[in-house]
Image 1: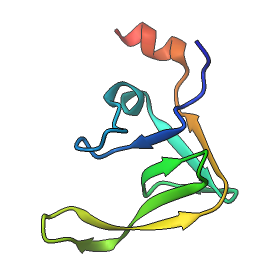
Image 2 (image 1 turned 180 degrees about the vertical axis):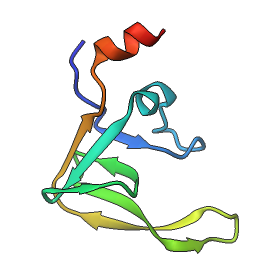
Image 3 (image 1 turned 180 degrees about the horizontal axis):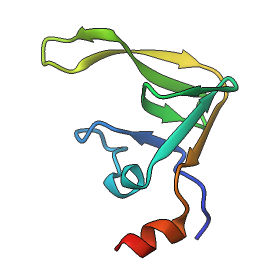
Length: 87
């Protein structure tokens, strides 16, 4: 198994790209060379991230998001060995 994050990931449980195991391990995002902590979803192959638009909410109570285009570099915050030791 390689130690690279998935090509596409979302932190919304209703999304088909949601993966609780990967999110539990911790994902960091480097977008256009800068660290981003407000990423809701990303796609490496399509070069975009979706970020929250301030504190604005839609009519269902979910944060409004905006899609930004550019190079995306996801990485794990913890190693695979660290998560194996916890279990």
